[in-house]
Length: 93
Image (cartoon, rainbow, N blue to C red; front, side, top):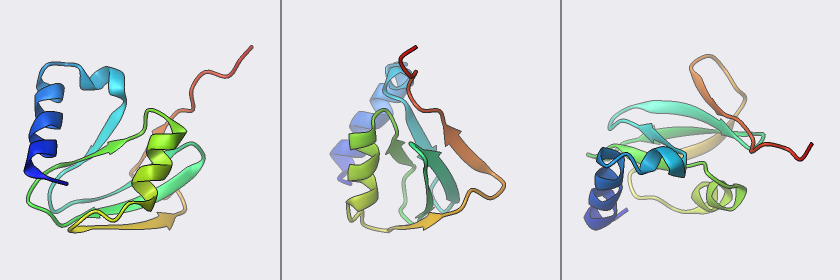
């Protein structure tokens, strides 16, 4: 992810806009398991910046899972402890 992209996302978070975008973050040097839309990704952030993971839609989630992100290792996981679970969007009633 480019420095511009990271800066843009940082500004969105600080303005409170990101709350509506449904992003999860993984701090620099940390590893997190994030579950969204029924699948779990183990994300290891080796970059010098916090990583924002898009979980607002299935298309965003799949694109992130498939994308090669420099200094970020991703693998599928089962949902162990310390997993951030993102609820699915409201089903039609």
